[in-house]
Each structure stands twice: as C-alpha cells, then as structure tokens.
Length: 344
Ligand SMILES: [Zn+2]
Image 1 (tube, rainbow, N blue to C red):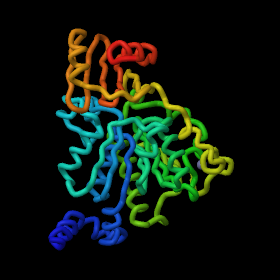
Image 2: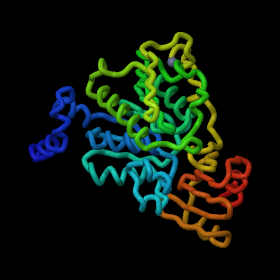
Image 3: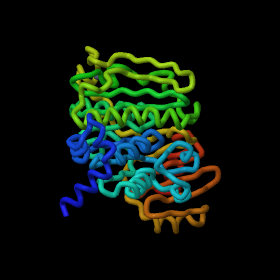
Image 4: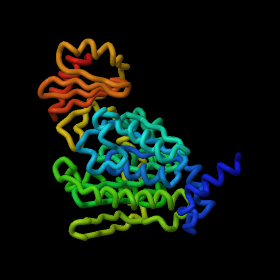
C-alpha cells in the first residue's frame, strides 16, 4: 500500500522531480510544507493553483470576498457556477483545488485578516503569500511576518504592471523598509485602472517560484530585489532589498503598529462600489434572517452566504455577521443599512 502511494506521488510530480534543483528530496519537502495564501482573487487564485498543483502539502486560503461574473476574466480557480452561487472565494477555491489535487490539505477561511485573528489565519505556516489587493492588509502581513520571523512574498498586479518582493525577516528588507507609507501611484486599483490577466499570472509565476525555492532550501536562488515589470511597455526596474533599512519601523524598531492596531470597522473593497462591515462577530441564522428580510426585497442564501437586494443596494452577509454592502462607498450609509436589516 505504501509503495502504491509513493508510486502515485512519483508519477503525479514526475516532471517536477525531473527538474534537478527540486528532485525527489525537494518534492518531499514541498509535501511537508505549509503555506498561507492571503487573498484569493486574481493573484491569490493563480498562486494557489500553481502551488497546489506543485504539491504543497498544506495550503490555507483566506479571502473575505465572494465570486462575481467580472472575476472570471482573470481569477483562474472560479467558474460561472461559482459566480451564479456567489460562493465565497476561499470555499470555491478549495473545491476547485480538490478536483485536481485531492491529496493535499486545503483549509479555506472566508474571513478578513485583522489584527485580532492574524495569529490564527497567518500563523503555523512556513510561508505567507500575498494575494491581497490593499496595503492595509499587506502592512498587517508584514508586521506579523517580521514579528514572527516568517518569510512572506509581496505580489501585486494592476493594469499591465506587476510588482513583487520576497521578504526574509532578519535578512532582507521588509515591506516597511521599502515603503514606509502606503505608496502613491500604487493606490490605483483594478477598479480604476483595469487589469490584464497576463500581468496577474506573471506576478504569480514569479512569486510561486520564489516560494518553491524557499521551501526546498534553495535560499541562495531567491531574488533580493523589489522587481517591477510592465508587460505592455516592457519597462522594468529592480531595487535592491538585500539589507534591511536602518531605522525601519518594523524590522529595526519592532514597532508593529498595524498588528497592534485596533480593528478596522469598514473597508472599501477593490473593484467594486462597496463597503465591508465587520464591527463585531455575531452568528447569523440564515433561515431566520431570510424570513425577516423577505417582505423587504429579494433574498437568497446557501450555507455560506446570504444575499439581499434593496434598490440600489445589494447586501451580502456571511455566517459570522460580516457583510459587504454594494452600491455605496459611504460607510455611514452602509452602517445604517446593516443596522436596519441585520441588527445594530
Ligand atoms: Zn523593514
């Protein structure tokens, strides 16, 4: 029995084992590796797809959002039925991965990473990968990773442009070394600038290869630069990140402000005219709330998500009480809708 399993393993990963820098020993290291992918939109689903196919033994997928039709142009783990069901991206990703690699462990979390849950969602892994779309979460990942001396890989793509850096705490620069504050010019989002699916796959290919190098112990092959590349203009640039910056808030002064920060009551999401509300956890009974909302407008739900429409707004509710309210970027309006339809 043992032999059958190892034959299947050798067969499944044969093309990677044939690549000498990985080999049979490296493939075993990948099978024993634990990786968290934070954010499972375009970049995150490309990362999770590549790494699960490559045989990373344990993948934790964290995402706060649900699948929509406009995601399908670039988010490689989702299909039309996921969008029709408004499945949480973490759940849809885990299901899709199981269909092509049922031999690895995938742990989905339909949740937003906050200072309060960072240890649970980002801890107990060998590496954290950035599939997020915002600097707020990236600074939180950076604070957590630097404070725990955990490697992480920053990856971003907007329009035709990709940026990535591999952060090895105690060795290389961290995100706060390079960008002490949220960089201007990078605050454009796929909402305002659009995005090429090839820019996403490009940055995910680089980041997942860096991940594999790190996990098989090829640390000397890791890139120690902040790389940016525009696939449309072919402009590229690299800034050295070989050394931490002296005076860096995070890696020099150990000031982990984002990790210590109080919870974030609302966040405007990328790519949509919407506000997320997660002020407090409250377990939601979808059947009960569905009955209560029915007189006020169309409602539907599955076990993961409830949707309610009241023109011009669309409210998406998760079982822990978190909500995404579409149709506004005004936190006051979003909060009052939440209070009216969910509770205060
Ligand atoms: Zn630093």
